[in-house]
Structure formats: C-alpha cells, structure tokens
Amino acid sequence: MENLNILALTLGENTPSSRFRVRKLTPELTRFNINVDELYAKYGSYPPAGSINRLGWLPLALKDAYLRVRKSKDYDLCLVQKPLLSTLITFEPFIRKPFIFDVDDAVHLGKRGGLINKIAQKSAHVICGNQFLAEHYSKFAEVTILPTAVDTGYFYPQKTKDDRLTIGWSGSSSGFKYLYNIEAQLLEVLNRHSEACIKIVSNEPPKFKLIDPTRIIFEKWTSDTEVQAIQDFSVGLMPLDDNQWERGKCSYKMLTYMSVGVPVVVSDVGMNISVMSHGESGYLASTPSDWIEAISELLNSQSLREKMGGIGRKVVCEHYSNNVIVPQLTRVIRNICK
Image: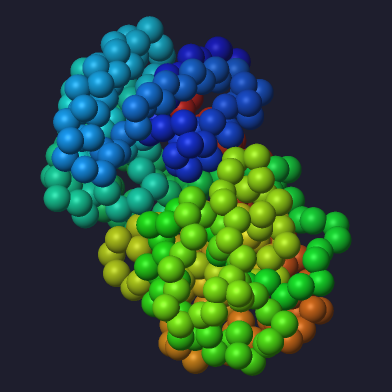
C-alpha cells in the first residue's frame, strides 16, 4: 500500500476538534500507511476578547496561517479544519490542491457563511460530523459523514465508582448557557435527592442563581484529568437549545460520557437523537418535566444506571470508536489520492 503524507491544518493545541478529529487519529492512520503532520494555529484560530488584544493577535495569526499554508505544497493532501482563522478567509485559496475540508459544527451559519461555502467548493471533499452538516455541504462538494471518533481505550469505564450520586457536565464555559436553561429543573432534582450533587468540569466555575453553591463541585478541566473527571458521574448531561446551530453539533460530549459507561440525559435535538437510536443509553429530554423525571429515575436506580451505561459503552464501541471511523477516513483519503 502506497505511503501518503498528509498535512493537517488545525485550529489550536487544545481545541477539541483538533485533538479528537485529527491528533487522536494520527497514530491509527499510520497503520494504513498514512502519515499525518499537524500544524495547529500557534496563536489560536479564534480572536481573543477585547479590541486591543485582537489588534495584537491578528498580524501574528495571519503570519502563522501564511507559513502553515506554504508548507502544504510538500504533501500529497491537505486536511483543513474550518477556516484557518475564525470568521475570516485568509490564505485558503493558496492551499495545495487537492484538500479536504473538515467541518464539525455549523460554521456556515455565521456572518461570513458564504465565504465558508466557497472553501467547500474549492475542496476535493468535505468531511462532515453529522447528517445536518452533510445536507448543507453536499450543495458544494462531495461529502462523507464521519462523526468525531472516540478513543474507547482512552475514554474507558472506571472499575469502581464513587457511591456519591453525581449529576455531571463537562465542557467549555461557553456552554454554561445550556445548563442555566435547565437550572430550575436541576434544583428540583437536588431537592428530591438530598444526597446528590452537581459536578461541573470546565475552564471556570458556573454562576448558578438558584442552586446552593454547596451542592456544586467544580473541577478545572485539564487534558491529563479529562477522563477521570467524568468517570465518577452517575448521570451525564447534554442540554442544548433547539435551533440550527445546535443541530450542527456532533454530540461528542454525550459520546464521551457513554464511552466511560455513564448513562446520559440529553436534549432531543440533532445528532443526539441518532446516537440514542442505537440503544437505550439514557433518555432524550425536551420538556422541563422530562429533565426532572429522567435524571431522578437514573439517580433512583443503580442497576438502571449500570444497564444503560453498559449499553452506551457498546454503542460507542460499535459505531463511533476510532476502530470504526479511521478505516472510513482512510478510504476517503485514498480515493482522493488515486
């Protein structure tokens, strides 16, 4: 099998899509004689907060993007994750062709969505994280749906769990708005279950208005502890709004909970629905009472939690693991490089 050399232009050192859609797959791809060099945005692909900070960031980020794109000429194929710099089209026209455009959320809905569509048109192929994204990008290029793969050897169940009842959520603080939307329901659950607590794993603590801070455990996210931090959840939450942007999300939070054997309660939105269709790994929730009753039912029964957690782990291993996704990605790459 011919060796292929791929350059991946990714969004940042700790950006989830860079880590899980590229970096975690790189060792697996070498088994198929595909060598991947990653060049992530050294200064980040997203502008920092504050006008003054952005003025300092932009020239550095542009220079870095230019230097990364220059190197694409030395490779058989380039994989580009979203635009090189968020909300801007910069040096994408100079990326060596053919290239793959990798999209795992609804960036086309942003204020410069038309420019993003043009990148897709220039690509040889668009890899989409879910069906919703594929329906959009199929207007501009050939597409393949490849969910964000879960490394099931990395995200694995804990042998012995803490007896404490823990309602858990992990993610960036930008997602706190979804938790705040169900805060009243979480308070009701805590009132019913005096022994339960809420654990938040994020870059900063949440600021709930109704829930007693003594019922909240905050753990700062790090890549070293991200698996251990969610293994002791009794229930994993993924609330979302029901709109187009959320339908573009790839349910990775839900999948990581499931991979470590944690049952889930998630919004009845987008890809969450298709993941749940593979087996009863938890509950879909759409109304306030859904959230209260689903979380309470799981907290009430350890056997139910273990059963649904086991089903969730099996679903991830069979449909969303590296072992499933990497061979599919290999076929896409080799078809383009024929």
